[in-house]
Image (cartoon, rainbow, N blue to C red):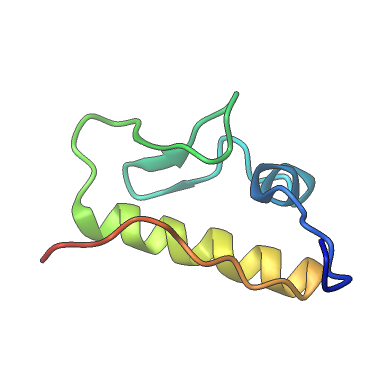
Length: 76
């Protein structure tokens, strides 16, 4: 990037954390595309998805010191 920063794909970071297939409640990180969170059980709650999102962001931050900023807008 022009300012000297480096762009790192979020999917790569999530994969390197070993989070493909990770679950929270009924929500899961899709096994072949770590940017996709799915309702794997068929009855995941909104909280399951939000908690999984937070867990993924936390794990990436712990391992790499990088803060992921979700692009999804949550409507409650």
